[in-house]
Length: 286
Image 1 (cartoon, one colour):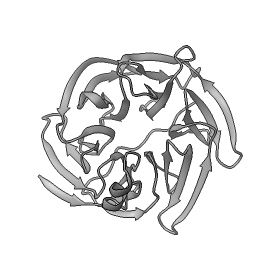
Image 2 (spheres, helix red, strand yellow):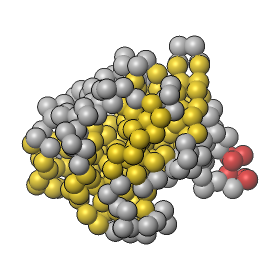
Image 3 (cartoon, rainbow, N blue to C red):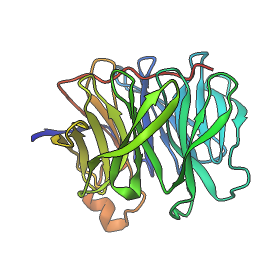
Image 4 (cartoon, rainbow, N blue to C red):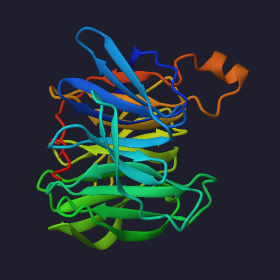
């Protein structure tokens, strides 16, 4: 197994950094608990921050411009330059205490977004597909505890999914927005799988909450290929940049005073060189 070391490129001090995505030559990510969306240009170190009125689970680019944002229990359309928030769907209006967490778009441009209980009570969340045509939310996986990482294989025929407390990565056959034939392809013991992305070789890069790094597994065999070591315990998610290399988000949420002293870079953004590129990220087509 190959070992890679990550470097802190932005000591952001996030409480719960999440959802990194490379878009328009900038890294976008969210701090869920501070209700913030961040944008950072690694070329000139220019950073911007927007504060929204509720917890921000994700910010996914739209082909039409702007982003779809998981804002508490709703999904809204958001335009950073105008500050416009337009409610799109609210599929769990009858389930108080839930919020949206991680999300990504499939190769057809539909959004897949999962929910969880604010209390992290098990079995309270779901995974939804929000159609690019009509913006209708359909529950595709029920009784989820902490809906997290999503990724697609390079050929678009397999969808990978994480419900963190299971410590597994599951795969589904994927055809035209439908999923079936669920099975476990990776099992983890050194932390809880959180965010995830796939590379051009068909391997999965999985952030480990409580695992001090990001691990790379071949989902066809389950074999671990590499680990990116990060000097932070709570690793939340990762994404590839345009030229390759992995951006990594982290959290400081559960640290006490001594914990912050032991992990001064917790909540920072990290970067690691890799030998592969990522699968192109789809934008929401609606």
